Image (cartoon, rainbow, N blue to C red; front, side, top):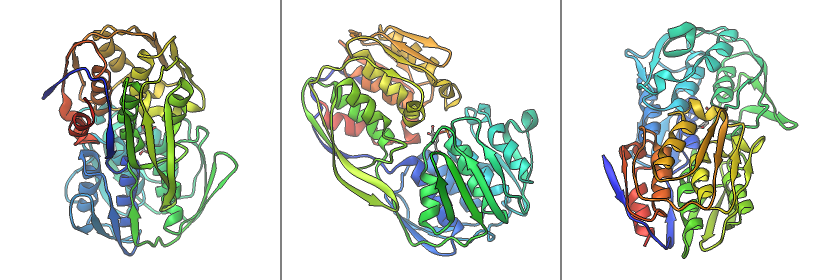
Length: 429
Ligand code: S3P
């Protein structure tokens, strides 16, 4: 499916964005681990979270309701059932990796697979430490690639430094650690998003953080809870925020956005570039900070450097930050982001290739991008490569090109933000 995007001058109005994808996966999974019925509000209704829900259903989890509001009947840690079919994580890396942690603790056999893109993504980062904990896991290329065949067991606690910047790996190990007896210690050197730690603490797990990145989890423990309220996803809001910041005119108010500090790099980088963003009405839902955001257009942005500790805090926003950088004065350099090559697509390659079609000067580095600012983009025919974040970043760039563009493969946005084009066309003029 393709969409035509015309240049605009103003982004104006008020909106909400879908529930946070990372928190939605965790709310579904951790609600299943309780012995209670947990009500989830503002769940992300999109393909990735549906993959998690479908896999949990195959494991015997029951729920009521549909769409954004669900009641999940928890199974407790030990109540899951052996699935009678292959579990399919679809396009969702978070589903596959978090579920691998859960399956590693189950006393039955299961097989986990995904779509063509997910079957190419590295799984050894999670299978290796899970094997160290005592799970039996086989997969293509020595456990590196899906499909994985997992036979769980009573696991041993783990003491592990996660060698890559991955919240999914950290989360899988914390879930598996719930199935061990004793104290697990995980070092998250890169300070990746901490939604798992917050959700586990909210449900009563014995989990603490020491210093900057040392997580300690004591098990066993019974998880208890009755409600999750999911904030809007800052990574989806990012496309609207960049559009509003780049628009010559207008003000955009986005209600109810998660502002967990491990995710707010987008706001800090844009402010450093000169954008006008206010964070209003700060509050908290289930230990997750939330606020409303006001973004004013018409500011001149300047180029910046994005590297080091900032990278995990903007990892999903780099394609759209590259778009912001195109319209800034001066160059922007992004370094230390090689992880982007193993996301749903190789995002460094895809975003530079596609923006170049619009006439952008973007150079690909092994671990980043150099973006020449001050671009005058021409409308072009671009391709999403089946990646929702590439589709939405290209659509954002196309709003400020000199003529109309066509983006092909826009059905990919169903992964995380099915209403994206409707919201954008309501706000843009
Ligand atoms: C996610 C973690 C990040 C992120 C992804 C969601 C999560 O992936 O890119 O969109 O929910 O834990 P990695 O753990 O691979 O960095």
